[in-house]
Length: 333
Image (cartoon, rainbow, N blue to C red; front, side, top):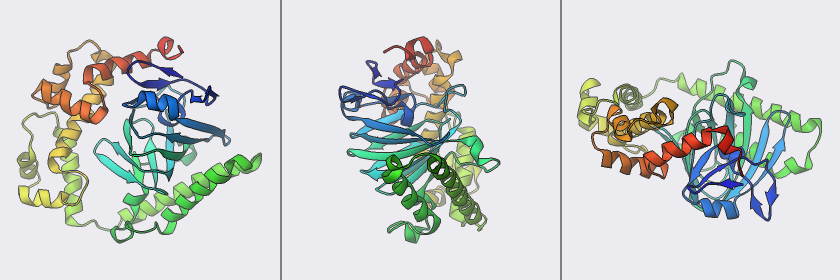
């Protein structure tokens, strides 16, 4: 496995050498980790071809891994990742969304967007990389987590309905896949696509139920912040004023959620800044200029919050992403 000094992992074909996994890229793509030595020593994965769907069983130590957005020309860039946690615990974030995973919880992620996996303990994941084209005209989410799909009263217990079926199905496939061969493997892949389509249909049916006023306010706040995050003067009071509500009512809408109105604003600015740093045309522009263009008014605050979210300073993040994007460098051992 190629491990560069700042902890990026890339390349490899799923083999192992001297007990060290060659790459975490089948599951995470081009990634940065704050535990590069532990990952190089302890991460393991097994890859199965399921007739166009790639299955990956991966074990890894406690670590924080940020997966970069997959480039449009990269193999697997147009895949949807469906993963279930077999053992351990993790928190997955994508932009403003966050999902806590326990044993049996599953998550759907769009490979074209960056995500961060904070793995709290030695954990095992089973994931499927499914080409987007296999879903036809079905609208696919950027992120969908099993616990987030459940009614509030069900989330403290076992998953029910189609969501529980998906969890049990994925865990059964993980346990039995090594013993299945031939056409049955491809049929399992087809069944997975059909089951996920059923889950998405259930989600659409639920979304037709009129949402409560607080949920609508959260949605409107997220949309407004996303559109105006570059305004350095934007604050909670400004959001509340634009939405014709009091700041108290806005805070009430986010009570009990995994994010506050302030965090909503800073996360939107961080995501805009991250995308700008990944843009090759900004390679030689000052990091501070990019930060100011996306709503930050302090270089120090930007550097601090960026490192807290992505695990490294913004300048190094841009340099490492640029280096990984150059084929001549990513191919080297």
